[in-house]
Amino acid sequence: MNEVGGHGQRARLWISWLVVSVLLGYGVAQTVITAAKLFTS
Image (cartoon, rainbow, N blue to C red):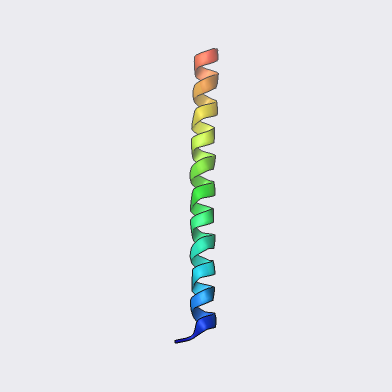
């Protein structure tokens, strides 16, 4: 069992989840902003 390899894999998993959540959050924010512009105009 390689401790460093497992730790690196966990870090990579965290980074991938972080990227996914940021992209999802950005998409949701864009949708909300667009919807707000449509409703307010």
